[in-house]
Length: 135
Image (cartoon, rainbow, N blue to C red; front, top):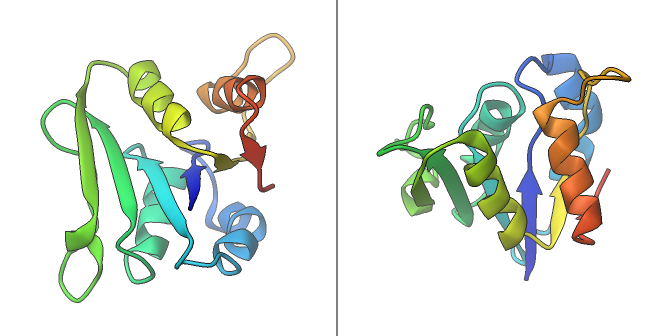
């Protein structure tokens, strides 16, 4: 089973999400893929909203006792999602999702030459750990 971690910038636009994430998300075989997502704004929440009617095979990673954001469960597959919480910071939470994945889908719009975003740091870690990029 493919374990896909989807992440990205918190300030991603809907147009960028449609251009960069949706082509892959609409071509995924939901029978052979499980998804790993964190609970930050932007790419995370847009991905959750997309996946809520497509699959119950989602693990949502969050800090503290409950996610900052959770899609509606009514007439969706969200009630089948697994919650993985209690992380104390973003890096710890992201690292858990990266360790669980075999593949990743992410793009970074925020890094500058001298300043890497959290998204870019996660992409570099995925590359270092030889996770397969889907973008």
